[in-house]
Image 1 (cartoon, protein in one colour):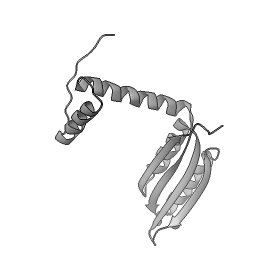
Image 2: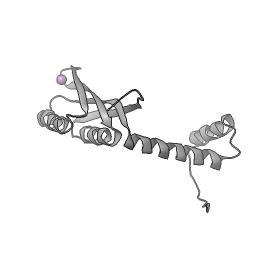
Image 3: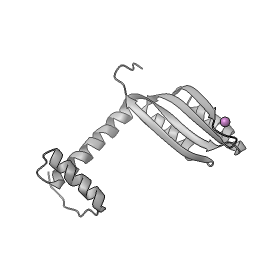
Image 4: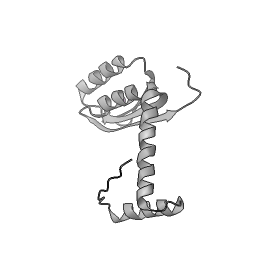
Length: 137
Ligand code: NI
């Protein structure tokens, strides 16, 4: 296969981390290490899309944004097949924490999380997914 060359700009600390990675894994050079990192990432994406995974969406949001609660509920109803349970904590008079346990195709879970996390009034949001071989759909 033809090989193309390209330049990469990295911050000093990232470059140091890369060189450490090269040494620790006995790569002959940086190119080999970067190639392996990219391939690994692509493989991970592939299985994520095609496999059933389990995980959680964590959201921290503004309690006073009234329409936010309604919008969140609507989105969650669109994904009722993926949502296992929702736990809501009132963190303070202003702040809510919601943890949504999910299971389903990784691309559906990513879609759901993206819709929730990008809502106005959501301060922080994160989706964590785990492949679990004992999960039978
Ligand atoms: Ni609350």
